[in-house]
Length: 186
Image 1 (cartoon, rainbow, N blue to C red):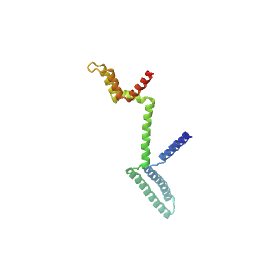
Image 2 (tube, rainbow, N blue to C red):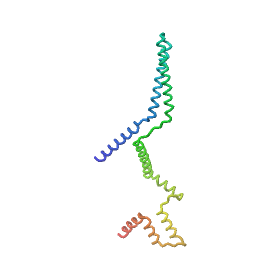
Image 3 (spheres, rainbow, N blue to C red):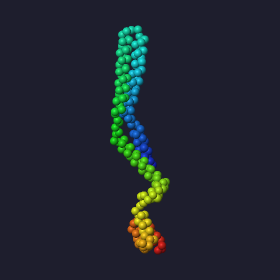
Image 4 (cartoon, helix red, strand yellow):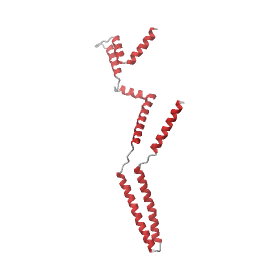
């Protein structure tokens, strides 16, 4: 029952996050879309007003149609100015959207690290760095130094000294040694 409950929580969280991220519209884009719509509607009514002004036989109606056409031209011009001035405006991202974005980036980076670790590619990358002499762990450097001193004639090192150095520098080696010692004494 517990895993089923946990899976439901993950699904609900995923759906909620997706809705929140995709339902956000940029205010700048909304203003631009509205300005385009207003200009298009004004253009259509301008064409109708010009048609009325040309085709009517009554001077009063023609005069009113020309006045309407002038107003529509002003609206189209102002909509164009709005779109031009909009370039100086920037959207402000809400704090929660910025936080979700940062969490998403962190989860993606963590996922890549886990993927590298689980597939063995991470070990391959570490081996490449080690081959270049970079990022070699200090325990491995001490162990290699002890081994070289053990085989060197200038700095002779006894076997017991090299084991003591390994035991103090690598806790895993110490536990492995204790485990093997118990198995050999049986």
